[in-house]
Length: 295
Image (cartoon, rainbow, N blue to C red; front, side):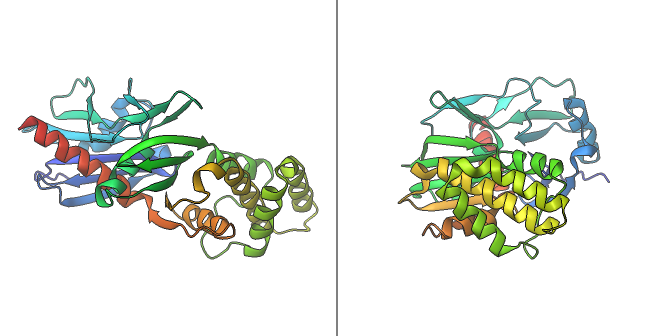
């Protein structure tokens, strides 16, 4: 596969794998590809190898990356910050590519870092510049970001998605619900119980483990209880962000629906945006900014 019409390439590194979008110079998507995490390594050379089919010896193609933590020294902007689409160039010993990375965000108190999710917020704000409220982004981590007057004012981060995978494995539960196999009743009860009494979360894990071992609950029910407890804990910690504010969730399935369901029980009607289109919009915004500066 060699695509000589490629003008630039967008790359996103997320929890479930690597998404590649090959564009023409007008930012029309020519081809897209998704790679599993096992198909690409931690080194920059692995990224270039994955992009080999799109490259040409006759031109230097811009490659704009989001969320690739192994890249050397990504720039983190301190909040409050406006996501202007600025890019950082990386030193690459390959004349066929110019590798650039989108900036992340950093916060002093509480200390926090955000990388790929900042690109998703940038894409979201490119389409809704007047948004005033909170954006919850969910990928490898979850971040609650207060947005006002076009800037990220502050954010709070959680390890809920990572904990879900680790705990599901430890408890021998089904890892990764589809939208159709959630035990809604078990999930709703877990959210309510943990939000009411968050100190019981560790005990609830022991109960899920015992129930799974004794075959008293199905793996799906056990995982639904686990997800309800984890998201309930997160909502308790993020209450100052979502209470009384407009909330948008940027996430892939099933995360968006789970967070929205839990918030609805608290009287919050959240809008859900699929993560991939928001990331792509953010990368395209960065490409337009880069082109404007070049010219």
